[in-house]
Length: 313
Image (cartoon, rainbow, N blue to C red; front, side, top):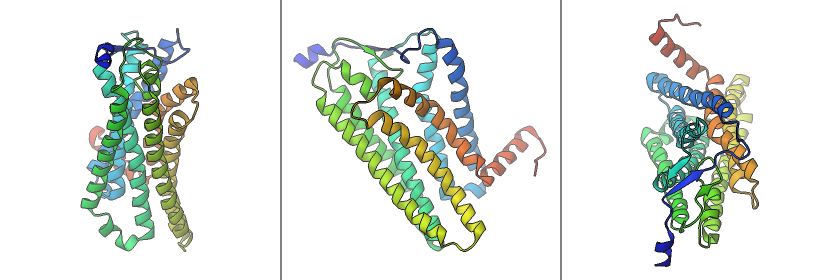
C-alpha cells in the first residue's frame, strides 16, 4: 500500500545536456545535420541492398538489419532532444519515459548481438568458404536475425521492469537528455541496489560475452587470412573485416564508458552518449560504403535511375 501511495509521478522533466544553458540554438544547428545524415545514409544503404540482387547475400542481409537498427536507435532519443533544443517543452510522460528506456536498451543490445552474428558470418565465409552457402542459408540467417531481436527484447524487458517497478514519488527532474537507468534510479524513493546490480551485471554480461565471441571469431579469421597465398585475396579479406572491426570499436567504447564504470563521470557519460546516439549511427554507412565497391556501385545505379545522371565508371 505504501508503494502504491508513493508512486505519484506522472511525468518527468528532462534537464537536457548539462552545462549547455544558452547554447541550445547552436547545439540544434550542430546536431540536426548529424541526425539527418544518419537517416539518409542508412536509408541509402537499405535501398542499395534491396534493389541489387548482387547484394542479396548473408553479409548484406545483416548489414541491412544494422541500417534499420541505426535509424531506429537514433530516433529513440534524437527527436525529443532536438525539440527540447528548439525551446519546446522538456516534459516527457511516465509512459513515454518507459518506452524510451525500453527501446534504447532493446536496440542497443541488438547492436551487440548483431555484431556478433556478423563476426560469425565473416568467420564462416573466410574459414569455411566451400560450405558457406550451406551454413549461412536463408533460413539460418533469418533465425539468427530473429534471435538478435528476441534476445534484445528479453534483455531490455528485464532492465525496464526493474527500473519502473520502483516507486517515483518526489523529484521528477531527470538530469539527462533522455530517460536512462543511471539518470532515473537516483529519483526513486526506494532501495535501488538490486536494480543497480542487475543492470550492471546484465549489461556487462551481454557486452562481455558478445565481445569475447567477436574476438574469438576474428582470431580464427586472422589465422585463416595469413594462410591465403594470394596477396589480392588477403587484401580483400582484411578490407572487409577491418570495416566491421572499426564499427565494433565505435560501439563498445561508449558501452564501457557509460555503463561499466564503478563510478561513472556524468558529464563524460553525457558526451559519450551523444556520440553514441548521433555520431555512431551516422558513421556506420560511411564505414561500410566507403570501403565497399559493391555497395557504391548499387548506389550509383539507384542515382542513375532516379535522376537520369549517366553512370560514372
